[in-house]
Length: 206
Image (cartoon, rainbow, N blue to C red; front, top):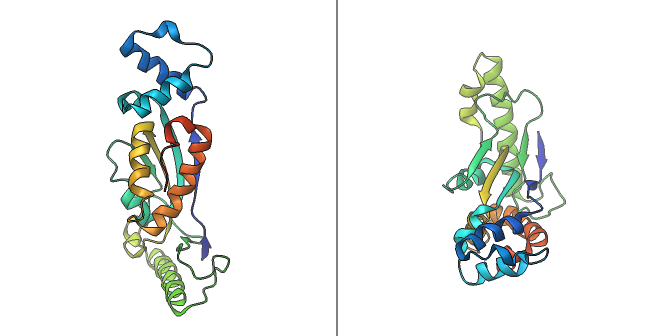
């Protein structure tokens, strides 16, 4: 058994995202003649401030998350996205099984657990891994043995959404009412895209 931290990786964020948004937006105003080498930032900023968010649907961002299955159960509820997720039907966990460390761990640098609750969690994960492998040894297929796998199991999911939908996702998943594991996954991604595409995400503050 191995305990790991969750993380994200941006797989696709076109360098000309703002230019694409400007071209789409200026179609509405028939002001394509005003496009210059540096006009995109100002124009897209205007679109965002005025709430003309339909235009920022023309920019897509693709992200890969490595997190637990509980978090991904929430992510896939976002309807206007595309997903590709590691399948417990077809992936057979015969080697070392990985689990995502809960973000409320008392000591972030300690993966061996230091509180009674953490010890209970570790024991439960070890038991799930052991029982899963016993089921495989007894002839169960991966899609059958997965019935005992916990939410803490590591999973990978690739998620594509347009910029407008990412703004909606951040608004929900970075808010204080969201699950702590989700918040700790989404805030670093928000910071990352704010650095890469500041014009369309800078107003999101949590």
